[in-house]
Image (spheres, rainbow, N blue to C red):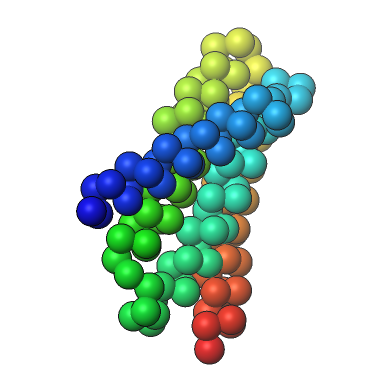
Length: 123
């Protein structure tokens, strides 16, 4: 049952990421669809990590469905890395650097903020 939960969540997360890719796209060479997917996914991951920390009522299949399946497929390090390499190969080092630094700062900050929010609500 756990494998099915992860697979179903992964299908949903992958469709969400593709939808963001199509609807947001890129602006000025910056792939905002992937950026938004990673930022939202990181914040949600932090929030859920805090909420699941002490919540025995939330089942393991549900936690895996959301965190490994949905958010694991929504966020994508490999696409982020390829898009940064593509910017470098296109001779746009400042876009690549901005994308790399911006993604790391926003996703780690978003995960931290999500965790803080989850802890605050979970008290």
